[in-house]
Length: 212
Image 1 (cartoon, rainbow, N blue to C red):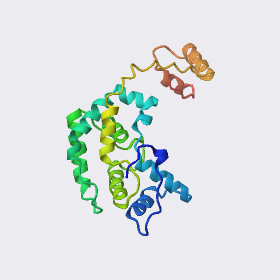
Image 2 (image 1 turned 45 degrees about the vertical axis):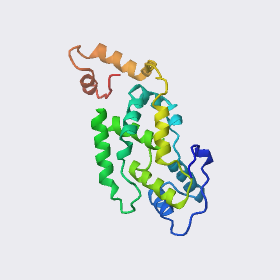
Image 3 (image 1 turned 120 degrees about the vertical axis):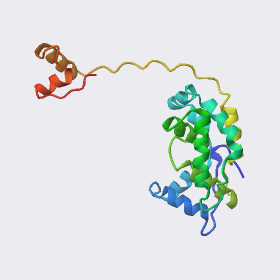
Image 4 (image 1 turned 135 degrees about the horizontal axis):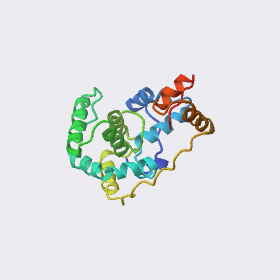
């Protein structure tokens, strides 16, 4: 069963020794204080609201940096995604190889690859490792737990990749220096030789200041 809206994901009672519940408790134990916390975390892990993630300032930056093209590359490589159903996690090596190949195909690496990839695959900016979350989807599928399966996620990326470009980022307003910093700069300008770097001059007067 699959649901697109996280608000509509209603978790059924889980069977004893549920592999999904066991893994959920393992990955979210630091965030669970009361029982409803676990249900809320499970809904977030099983949902996939990429559009909501992109309707933010960070999401707009992703789109300006070619998020649509990354989605197209994910779609093209989706047939070679590993099978995340194995509880023995034999898919870990295959997942790393898949991500490496995606990086090579798109010319992306490190943060520029992993952050937008997380949003594309999970609809979230942070959380459980992407591969572990994909494994949880397969566990949910096996136990009849509502979730957004991989096929629906890929279909969503096909729509998201055609979103209108947000345009250039608006210029950021300069942050005004506080009065103390301005006074210190004036003091240094009057008392310290022009040839001495600003920070060094501050240290000679028992001050420490970074020139903004």
